[in-house]
Length: 218
Image (cartoon, rainbow, N blue to C red):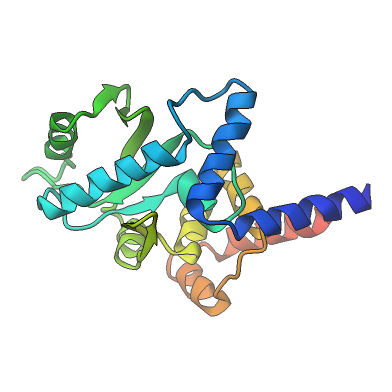
């Protein structure tokens, strides 16, 4: 059993080093075999199309900046993981009464072919949602996001350290699984940077709790 565990960890670490689009293709293949995901081609194609759409929104000055977060950001840094939607951090406009109003964003994406599906929009078969980056940690994560490129398409993704902080703040079972998945994938953390982020946002205790749980399971 120990040998099997080491083998799985080695596979996670190996696959985490693959290009993002290759990870997406692997995710799609695994999901189709389990009949959980139906997309016209590989998962990579609609993800890239949505990223291109967000870039167009920036060019059109619908908003100034966005950053990929959530499960797809976990997949960008770590090994392939089953996720069927995309989360984007975007600063939402505020009304005079202090309410967040993203209606202009939704109108823009719908004019360009996105379809409302519950709380999501759907484009080229991929559901996506915009997460308001109006709170301190979200705004910091958006501002620190890095520019990367896949298949000639540049886009912004939250840093690994901010991604972990966002997951710690959410603290759902899924979020803890995502952090463990990243750590099992052998990601390289900038420890001092992560500690600084966690201290600023009072998340050190949750981080230590997660690490302690990992130690108990090892």
